[in-house]
Image 1 (cartoon, chains in turn red, yellow):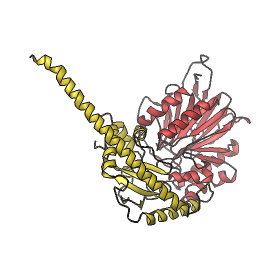
Image 2 (cartoon, chains in turn green, brown; image 1 turned 45 degrees about the horizontal axis):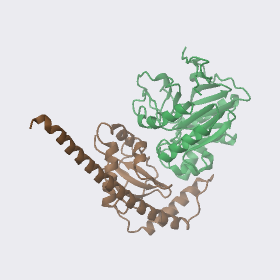
Image 3 (cartoon, one colour; image 1 turned 60 degrees about the vertical axis):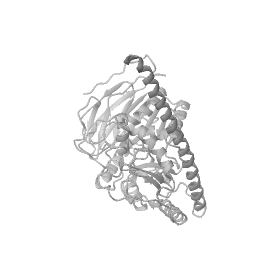
Length: 288
Length: 195
């Protein structure tokens, strides 16, 4: 099934704590954070803002895009760089699902609150129409590639979404696109209809223009920030490298809504992606 | 005999040399892989023996459990391999085979993307992480140090490792890392081509 996605940018500047998501009862709600594990004040501020938004947009699931614990992976680090910054969310029953970054000890997979069930890569289905795939992009060995192909092939979920640490496309001056990883993953994404991909590693927000019909987001600024690090490239649909941020996502039937929000509650990007059957729509992108 | 008529002979000769070299390389690689796999198997048996004396690692809400188990496993392996040294796994023959494989993937212009991949997360490339790792067999990989990416194409060509062992890079050196104990099992110096 070839899926065409329609994309409309709603607003590029908005006031604090505006919500640009439909917030429907039966849709899937989740948040996305990347490069979050510093234990610094910015991480706490983002955590507070996520908690504030959750009162208006109830979500029970957070994707972590890697670098979940910078520096030491000691027991104390799990507290100061994860449990305390997201204390209110954890207390509210929110489940975090982690992918591994280059700063993460792979044994984080045994930490129950990261919901990896002891696996470096895993998949889960939080909604009838949505399947998520967490990958270990540090170590894309043949076994993982075979597993991914098997799982993608076997999934009948219309929304197949992958999340991992290293971005296949990026306008970052420091890192840029992970072209080698792309060589291996992109063919599988295309073959089995992956619709959206979330990555971190770059310490900013970037929404890429659709690449071969797939929507890529970089959200690596939940506690780290590289100001002014987004280079001018043809890849960028929207970039933001001036403050820390997180994302909120809602999947409502054939529509994925997204919103990127700073630690102060300002919306820096929002929009929708349509999932449609073959030959029924044109891919379109516009921004206001 | 004209110069032109010599070309086919020259080409055939070159081809023969290339085929011979390839065959020799392939044999070296095959033998190296066999020896490497046998040494890895022996290491994993040792790790398994030590593991049976420490608490099993299962999913836990208590990170201290992970840390305690890791330390206990590391202590046990360090004791069991008290005389471990560089080359125990990467013997000279194994090392030659590995260097060929790595050079094949990381050398020259074609290998440039792979060399870039090796830099990702590499402690010598990360801010503030360089110069803190003691490179020796049977010592702990520091808790605070990031871990390098390993090019997928290289992982396709290197011998596959059992769960719990990983290839990683430290600068231009390849390390064999026991990810359950955080111990550097062995290493190979300067395997990544410069440039």
